[in-house]
Image (cartoon, rainbow, N blue to C red; front, side, top):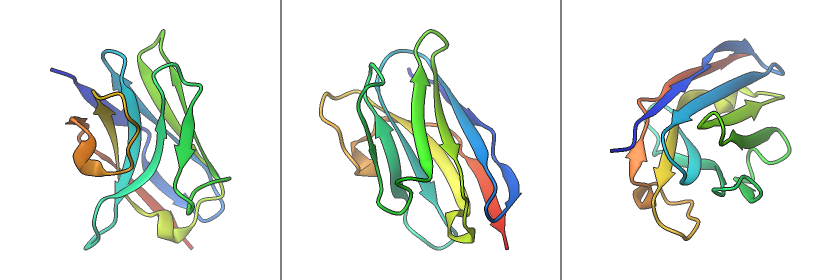
Amino acid sequence: QVQLVESGGGLVQAGGSLRLSCAASGSYIMGWFRQAPGQEREFVAHISRNGYGTYYASSVKGRFTISRDNAKNTVYLQMDSLKPEDTGVYYCAARLGMIYSVNPSDYDYWGQGTQVTVTT
């Protein structure tokens, strides 16, 4: 069983920054997703097992950075230049397979989520 625990969410003004962390046991492809009220869960970013491969949704590219420290079993999402439309619950997820995916249904384990609220 893979346990994922997110932290780092909060309330921030537009233009501000937050860093999310996800403690994950084991080595997997890791993804960040978010879900706004009344919306479907959407892909934000994913990272390869060794941390050298990353991919971003177009809506966050250039503003968000995904990284990982395998010595600490932790994946990060640095979020800069935040916008009100970035508001939502952010989830980290682990994929056991070898192929990258932006589809939430392809991820096998999920954290409990952390709320990010960006105000104007």
